[in-house]
Image (tube, rainbow, N blue to C red; front, top):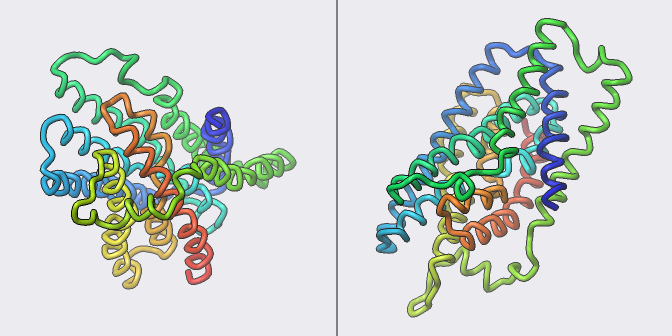
Length: 311
């Protein structure tokens, strides 16, 4: 499955992005949404870190446990935008903002957050960290820039050569067919990461419900539960409260609203497991990835047709 996922990341998603951007002229509106996307993602990570600090205080965490808790919650605000969020690319009105959002999430996941974690990790250990213990595989560090290269190439070809998918003839038809396979393949990949042994009612209760009096839960569950709540409850509610009035008063287009809202409830990306060497809690991350996927996928599958019909 790892090779399958890498195939999606390095072949299908970039080609899909290329197909979308070669059909548009990147103008003022796209630049504005790029700025909004940067602001939204920055806000989401700051929100996650702030809420994690509050919860760490409630749990009376200190020392290494507190630092592990904060880093894990911060990192797990990273969502599966390329895999699950890629479904938004299938809707013509949402394709451009969704593509911009995916590109920036990729940069955040594979460039910005690893850098932040490495700085925090170095500070904790007060010594240099060996590269083999701390860095992502070279191909994942390359990915955001690789993805952006396809987008930039498409924009330049469109604006300077006037080439679009239609002018490519049979080549355009082949490209469209190949990229049409991206969405079902991506959903299959995410679903394959769910472990049946974790899908028990009692396990779900641990993730959602507060601890009963006298009940003991280990640190892993505290991490997983808080990552789940911040990702699937607090963040979507706050994002909706901010952007619903903006859409209602027509300050932002409905397509932007739909892309931002749906991306706010996407599951935590399984690629966060690559960042465990930076000092993240492994089991807590795995639990939050599994349960956010279980809860998020049905919500996304309902929201996409509803919002696309309404807007």
